[in-house]
Length: 255
Image (cartoon, rainbow, N blue to C red; front, side, top):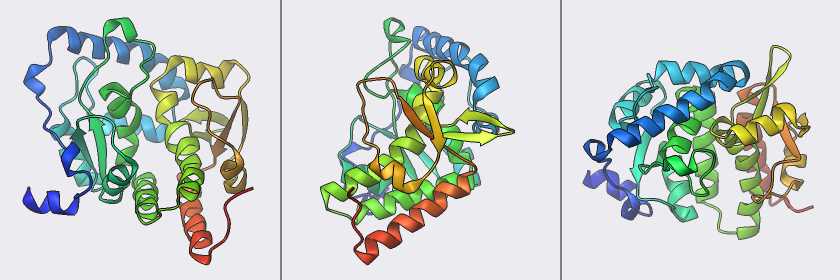
């Protein structure tokens, strides 16, 4: 443990243990209800890599996930770990964890009065929304590279631009598979409203283009009017290398 904390010096104050025995019967029932609400739509409209990851990690349908058990499966596949944290983390700590292939995972769960939406990510958003794709090697290489790049940048303007790539992929990413637009971003996976906005309410979908993504501001207080669809996860992996090369050359990321 001491070595791990030294490696994660910025994030160490936020690391906790998941007290799995403390979850109540009601909390397990809320998890089951959340999964029951989302799965019918996702079985039709989620990326195949997400569905495969959910099954390969044996994520439970009827009870909250045990993060140690999830991490044991993840580490065998991609070297990643769903690491329990106390809550919101400052950017340097977050980037440090991603660079070390640790995904900061909250352990609290929304109540039954907040099934549709919670402003602060909970374990449902973090595990149900994010973790299945952490079983996919190309996606996780992209995510680790994102953390490594951001961890060495201290210019807030550049970080905000790079953050748009994270937002329009990890959080609200789309992919074209078998001639259809599928969802893989955690904000779409975990939210019926956001997912339905893309599938049924006329949100524009454009091909993923790094320059356009960098030009598109993030708006967190409204449904999306524009999102971007990749053709494969190789596309965003390569985009990170392109972005890093531009930064290393001193190229401007501004409009």
